[in-house]
Amino acid sequence: MTQTPIDFDSPWKLMLESYFREFVSFFFPQVHDQIDWERQYESLDKELQQVVRDAELGKRLVDKLVKVWLRSGEEIWVLVHIEIQSQPETGFAERIYVYNYRIYDRYRQRVASLALLADERSNWRPNQFGYELFGCQVQFQFPIVKLLDYWEQWQTLEESRNPFAIVVMAHLKTQETRDNGVERKAWKFNLIKRLYEKGYQKQDVLNLFNFIDWLMNLPDALNREFWQELTQYEEEKRMPYVTSVERMALQEGQRLVIENMLEVRFGTLDEQLAAIIPALLEMSPKEYTPLLINLSREELLSRFQTA
Image 1 (spheres, rainbow, N blue to C red):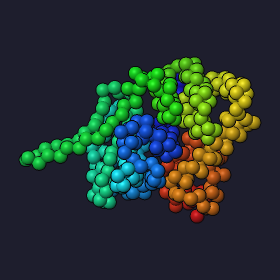
Image 2 (cartoon, one colour):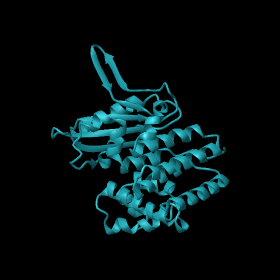
Image 3 (cartoon, rainbow, N blue to C red):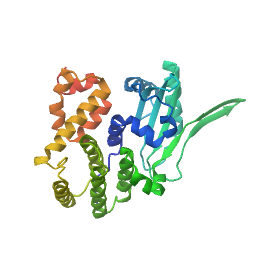
Image 4 (tube, helix red, strand yellow):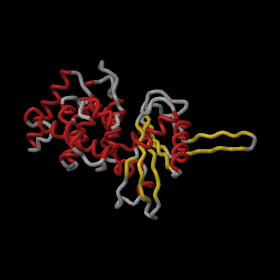
């Protein structure tokens, strides 16, 4: 199956923005249990962007900095890295170390760095950085999760209601079916059926559908077959979440996704930010998501000439 390279980074970033608590619960349950989720957590994207600019360590992939509160009442910062690439990166562990100590140095906040490795190299598992010189020793370790390990936990993924179980299944099946469009179409339909069978709310169905649809792209002929099958399935279930007239449900879902991303990034959705939504809806998710993830408020408003 000939296709353009898949953009894994943007849909993962979108899911991390929308389901941070579920992400921590699924991949790092020992961390989740120590956080007081009754208190609001706060995204610290501006702080992370400043540190990354200062560090000058090349391309940022899916990195997120969040302020949370422990059950003990202590404030901590959690730095999440999701690394998605086909080749090991020699300086990955060093990059995490640099981000960690620069955040501490700049803000005097203790930082927990968590890494999710979503590449296809089973033996690439960097989890520490350090050096020793003249009796002076630096040793930095951080927890990692390897997505490839979930092949051995497939039944657990099928049974879980955490949205990241579907995310992991879609990610792994996208990698596995890189050269088999027919098999990818079958798995894409299978995974989307699970959204209904698991009883997710409409907005969760739309969010997860966008993730699956972004990753598991199909050639035109197979894509038409897929939409025909999905339309029939939704009619039978009487749940036209995605395939209502002219896919209006999907567009409305995209509007809600955009609103959610703007609120997560910039707080309350004011008139200026709301004014750019129609223009964003004219774009595909693959076009607007990187803008909403990477641009500052001022850059977004300037780009759409609403400042």
